Amino acid sequence: MFLFPDSFVASLLEEDLHILDLTSQALGLSDQPAQVRAVARAASVAAGVEVAQRLFQLVGAEVTVQAPSGQVLRSGETLLVARGSVGNLHGAYKIAQNVLEYCGGVATRARLMVDQARGVSAAEVLVTRKHFPGAKRLSLAAALAGGAQIHRVGLSDSILIFDQHSQFLGGVEGLVKALPGVKSKYLEKKIAVEVANLAEAELVARAGADVIQCEKFVESDLRLAVQKVRAINPLVKILAAGGVNGDNAAALAATGVDGLVTSWPYFGKPQDVKMEFSDL
Image (cartoon, rainbow, N blue to C red; front, side, top):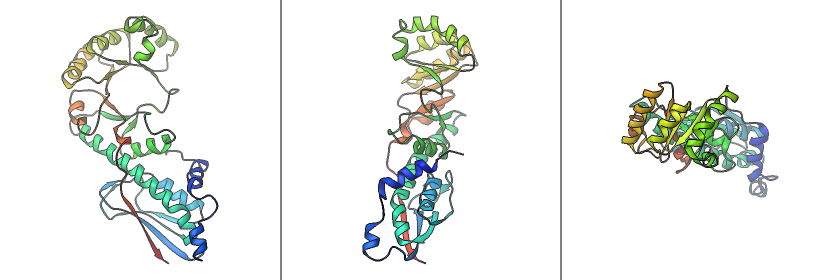
């Protein structure tokens, strides 16, 4: 279960519905019974459905979910149906549509990468924290719905050492000296290190890194890094990072890495979801 507190869902609703739907009020339609059906216009992966459901519920509508998050959709399939008054439905439908479309886009792109990677190996697709600011919950939940896993939720949940850290330790050589102390003190955590080349990968593997993240390696170098690092320590996990996308996921997964670190699913077109209104 991915937690979406009512306070979070209500904040989305309040961005659009400040007090009431003035147009429905002006036309005398606020209390007229109606329903709205959310329909996928193209094949996609459903995501954000539970948030959309709660948005409608918070304005007093009854909701039937027909395609929960993670379900693969055909064009024309219904995600959910909400029933209530015209005023209430109009109060929630646009933000619900936005959630379904943007989350659906992320989930569909994530599923594309997962399918490509799994077609050649057991490599996991791992999404980063490089989502649009303020959209963490929706972005991560959508990626999970698409079959991806989370690389990092934020800075507090894992130790990942970048060049921007090691430069203050005297470079990779200084980092190698510091690693044993870090591993000893944070004994419950795996220590991940990002590297820029094969030589760095071998150095940190020998120093005891648990995870090595290979930044922007070409396929041939990545394949060689997998061989060299596993010869040093077969338990080290090896990740491909930097420029990993829907076009190269299969090729990079085929090098033997354990995971593909990517931000690519976050950026692209939303899915197209039609909101069909009708009388009750």
